[in-house]
Amino acid sequence: MADPTRMTVPRFAALKDQGRKITMLTAYDYTMAGLLDAAGIEGILVGDSMSMVVQGHDTTLPVTLDEMIYHAEMVGRAVRQALVVVDMPFPSHHLGNYRAIESAGRILKETNCQAVKLEGGADQAGVIEALVTAGIPVMAHVGLRPQNIRQLGGYKVQRDKPQLMRDAKAAQQAGAFSIVLECIPEDIAAAITGELAIPTIGIGAGAGCDGQVLVTNDLLGLTSGYVPRFVKKYADLQTTISEAVTQYRDEVREGTFPTKEQTYKS
Image (spheres, rainbow, N blue to C red):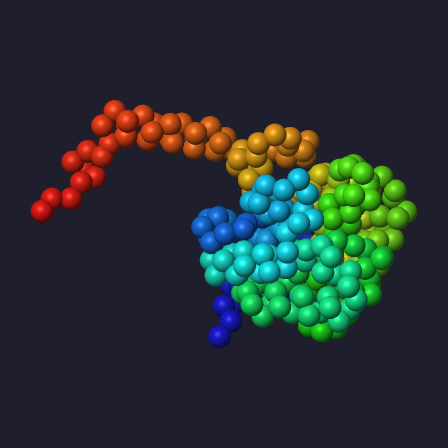
């Protein structure tokens, strides 16, 4: 029997009308997903950002559908309350409606996750509609689209208000239950949010969105190199981990670990 307290797609979508701000974070493994879920996050995204965060690539493009499913299965097994959404990796939703349904169907069948996310607005409205018609909940994604990075030539703020509004409205009309707005000026994101009946989840789109999403590694200070302007670092785990590992290394070399407290007796 379904847990009556579990976040579902309808409950998630209804948070906008309730005036309740929505929190989302990324997770790629069992341990982190369990921690986020226990903290009361409403949504957990198994993002294709794992291509960069976990696999060490420069873009989100290399991650495969099988790899997304592998990580989503771990996340889905850990989560008890949050809505779990899985990114459709490039180019799984550009291969025709049948292939998109097949790929998204695998995600739902082989994991304990409830929805998929795909990058696109007006240009992907037909795919969104096909997935929703097949019973697959879809979160859309407009503004900066990391999967289009080769075409865009870089990670750039998107300022074409008429096109962004068309994309957002087309995604809603096609049946998306929510939409991510990435790297959009705050006034444009707020205007889109005011026009839509479905929740907007911002990342680099200002406080006027209905909710926010961040890459968890960025939030925890585990990211090396460039960190986007829209990120707030709530912890410095990179330093904490480095100090802990260095202390362990030194104690082993000095013979002060393990002590009797960490040793078994016959």
